[in-house]
Amino acid sequence: MRAGFGLVGLLVTFAIIMYLIGGKGCGGQSYLQTMMGVKKEKEPWAQQIGGKDIRGRPFSETLEIEAWPEQGSLKGLYVKSVDPTGPAAQHFGLLPGDVILEIGLQDVGGPII
Image (cartoon, rainbow, N blue to C red):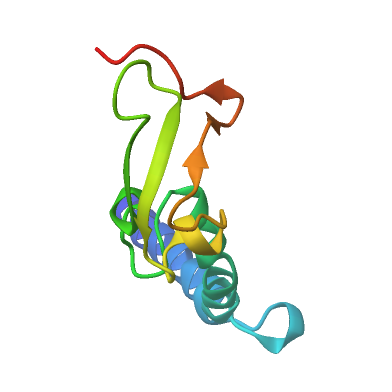
């Protein structure tokens, strides 16, 4: 008897899951189709927030920087080169020759240790 109730419970749970995944919801789309559409729409935004470009490369691999000025106290970061397809160029507008003085509200400068 208990085994029968357990089996019925599993079958009902399986039926609900299949209905949610394959059933037609809002706009005649299945749940899975809706989620894939959301993923496709939001993935570039999530990659940007995560510091990666569309191909999954980290932000740090899309530009080359060095201390500026090279001697003495650090005033900023000199951008030597930038991949034009990476997030440094596309999302932040960095170009070769730029000097980064602030990141967010934090100054870059300070003594070089």
